[in-house]
Image (cartoon, rainbow, N blue to C red; front, side, top):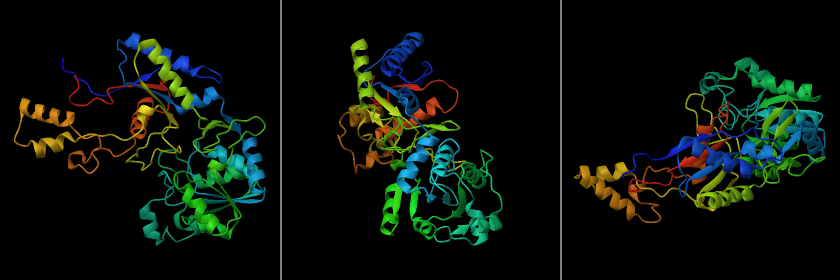
Length: 397
């Protein structure tokens, strides 16, 4: 019988995860329980995905602001520290900033404008144009910023992040000076000890600062890379990918978890005889057209995945075939011709016009985005996602 449904993404409910929980058993039992409850069966190349949050929770991968402060003081000297290019997020950066401020005497906070790296806006481009400001070259003091633009609150949160971040630093016991610039070297007029907080441009920023003579440059990925007084840590990503846990503690991105995804894959094979793929996912990689926010505040979409998820899609564009190669066909003849093209397609379609318009992204980025949209970030209670039919095509029954 011809299959009538393509890709299906299901949110799977599971218990609230605590430190030390056995995620292999929980994931497998949750998926198999959902299958029994909802009447679906597992197939080869189905995908099980776990949100990074429950993985880090099970690992107990948390750090306190005191831990961050100790690391900052040890690595940057505890005097005046430049904190540049942070994203504007109460969840993602505010507690990090508190810990950083506790580890030094003064913070020079340099904010990119008109928006941060992931699209959270301080200002609009229209405001800059009206004020005659060139964000690529102009460095603004806080006084000049307020003179030109006054108070600006975030469209969705209602927060004035300039005041909000300034107050965090002051309440942590440090002095604060705020400037606005997009050229990393601007911070060197204020201090030569710098924490660059950008995510996806961090390697370039570090290179620019070091080449310009900075004394110490640490990215967020260079802080909390080893335990402090028994704390959590992330050897590869440090503070990148962290989320607020309490007012004084953050949850880090998961530590190495390839063993976890392979163990879940093996357990499903033992119980069902099916070869599934498994991944851990964080933020998806997509942009909100209204708020202009690019969702990816994690350093990667997926920190761990089974080998079958390596690579990019290798697909033909059906509408291209229908409008070009088989424009004179219709009905059953068209279906047969397109099916034949799919079955006979090359293993690598790079440069083939018939693949033009298919999504040239890593499988893990595409699937992770689907998972993130399915699970949401609120109270759905489905931190495990089960996907079927992702690797199917038009020819499969």
